[in-house]
Image 1 (cartoon, rainbow, N blue to C red):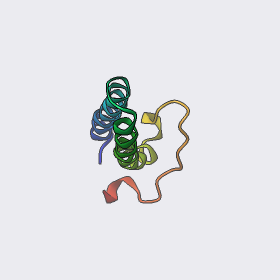
Image 2: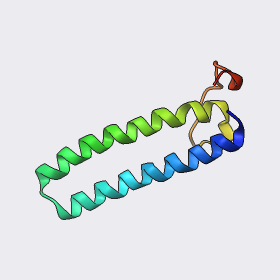
Image 3: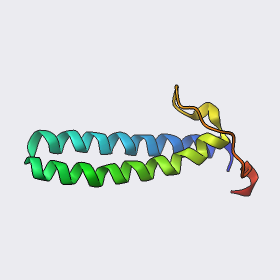
Image 4: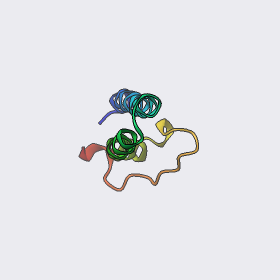
Length: 81
């Protein structure tokens, strides 16, 4: 994957992650505790999945990782994907 594609995917997935966070806050503000706890658990799974998609991008291109995130260099090599 080339760097420009990785950057576009990174932006799209980070936007999705923020949307999940926003949805959690919305449910917390407007729904019952039970609904919120269920939603937060499931939304956490979604956010975790997004992170699993982002990590290989950040390993291949550490300079696109968020500030403060330390990633190991890719062992797969960019050309293999």
